[in-house]
Length: 280
Image 1 (cartoon, rainbow, N blue to C red):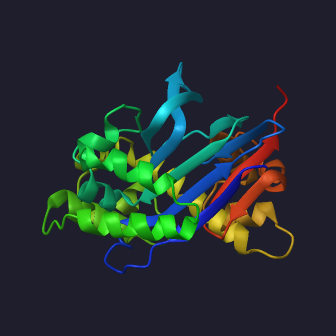
Image 2 (cartoon, rainbow, N blue to C red; image 1 turned 30 degrees about the vertical axis):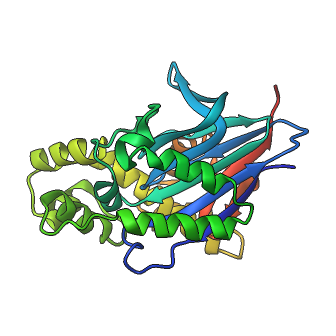
């Protein structure tokens, strides 16, 4: 079958500020290769793979066979991820908010973390056995409830922590925002803003706001039922003109807006990906 994706929505009000959702991706008996494209997002994904491992070579990401389970982190990347799906596949993606990352992980955030000991170093050695057990559950909603309960047990509460305060303020921003407006809202100098983003998010304020605006644009477009007027959309979301919108779309999706919109897949009004047959 082709890739099947299911979203588990977090039930606990205590956990929602820190975990956006849990995404399950599965495929078996794959008969035709597909290229699955995931898009830049303003969250941090902990991916756990069954019998697969994510590798990186010359800035390209690819999947390899693996014994047991493996894990990776991806955060605030500014280019689309393209994966060729050609074998059975079972993946759990836990999507943390930036503030949520500081409550669950010990290591500084990097755009990509592809380390063998990722789970054990941040959650203890028992985490590997826990997820092996979770992969044995066939009902995905049961998987979600099990993982949510596990996360609640491990949620560390941080109060008046500078990083926590900064990330919470960032999370509460609304509307389209420029770097200057962001600096004013957070009441900090440009130098401090750049340094704090590099330390906490491993990206620049400019790239963070570009990604954030792109995700807001996708959410808006997914609610539009009539024909999309792209020039009007460009103006509405603060792009200089339509050509600026096209440039950003190509940077984040690899395609122009109209071409991308024909191939995109919206998963339960929460996750947007692009799936196309592989030419290889």
